[in-house]
Length: 152
Ligand code: RB5
Image 1 (spheres, rainbow, N blue to C red):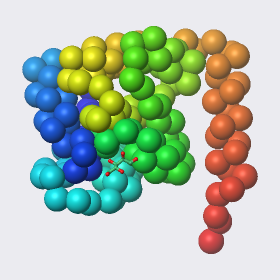
Image 2 (cartoon, rainbow, N blue to C red; image 1 turned 90 degrees about the vertical axis):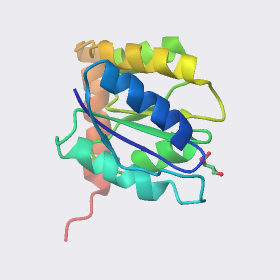
Image 3 (tube, protein in one colour; image 1 turned 120 degrees about the vertical axis):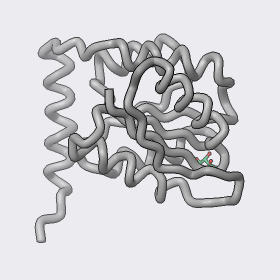
């Protein structure tokens, strides 16, 4: 898979672990930063990752900050993005089956690399259920985006 990844200063260490894991697993990874502990603003890193996913240039996105919350909020402002904040294995599977999430957010200050890599494996391997119940809910989310879309 082509995977776009980004982090802020509170998530870049876990990002490096994740990139190493993804490359080892054979994925094509594009790293949008950041690369050091200097304080930066997480929306600046969520945006390019989400643009890649929303445009189809990347299959999936992964975002990491201290809690994962800021990245999740920012990512879900981008039309077409369904970003899930996940810190456990059950949710990793459920959000793929039920929400067809295309971006995964995690918090480096919340979980360690062992759990994070297990989450990523499950999240990448689990297909969307395709069931009409879930597809209908995702269609309604798309309608919400359309309702608030700004048409110049
Ligand atoms: C940075 O201090 C922290 O606020 C950020 O990484 C994230 O946790 C925000 O939601």
